[in-house]
Length: 186
Image 1 (tube, helix red, strand yellow):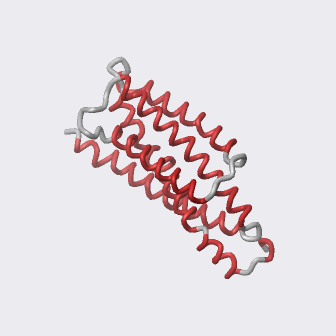
Image 2: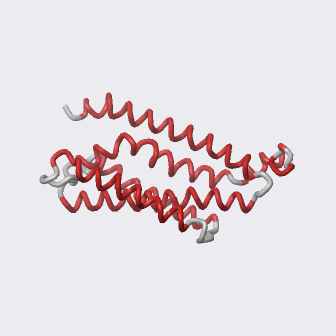
Image 3: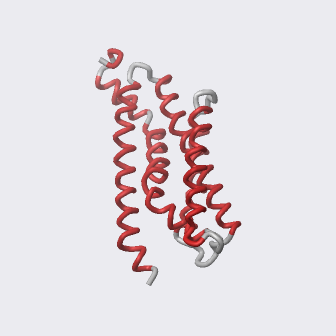
């Protein structure tokens, strides 16, 4: 029965955890939602002339991005942080997203393209992956320690919110790539 906690106690802990739940949703809805569809466009825009279509840039971003998840997951339980640290990390994440989205949208127009642009995009994407893994793992660890009797309930609610946010972003980015982006290229 989830540690014997009452329903009102479970929801009280969910409400108390809402800022961290919101951070997790914000982080994952981009990393696992929009970037799934959009990062190939960003890599094509940022690629140097020698990488026609950005396939090598995309391979570097995806492969090194996946590798960057591992140290974030490993370090998260070892480094204890206050909630304030996660707020600052989420601000850093927004900054990294701004760079990645500017490459995806080629904004400002014509500033992307070349080796330096590809390195910047891949570096920001990998750092965002590391930060995302660190934040997500830490949040689950912290809430488990903070609310041991209701951690399962909180994690379940957080997982539902996270998946809903990610699904919305995945569909939105997919539809944008299929219908809006092609019309903008004409």
